[in-house]
Image (cartoon, rainbow, N blue to C red; front, side, top):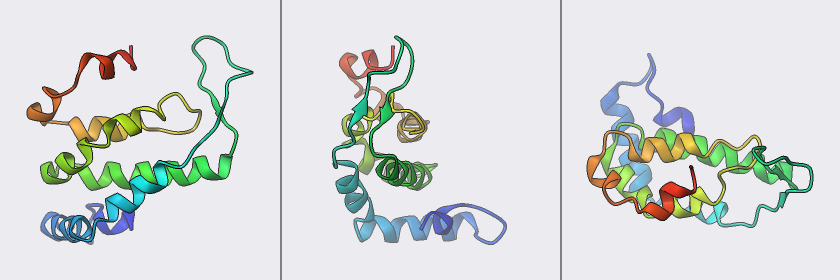
Length: 130
């Protein structure tokens, strides 16, 4: 699905936007968020103070990573999708700090150039990243 919502030489910005809208209409993002609600256990036994936790199930971690890549591209330069995904931002933040799982880029895209959403972020959320 990711390639269908990525801008490149084959797809115009308008085509990509229409495809993103169709995916939102079919609630594709809800199915992905349900996947991300699965329990991804962390192995904290090996780490130092500033090291990421290892996922005990690497296959599930890899599925999560593909989900985050898709969501990042879905919301990129599309305020309507940013708004839809903003309600899940606390779920996403629970996955920050897992080795080989890049969640922060997705969170960043949800908030990118969207002052209204940024103003709704609470201090508790920010402190997770400090």
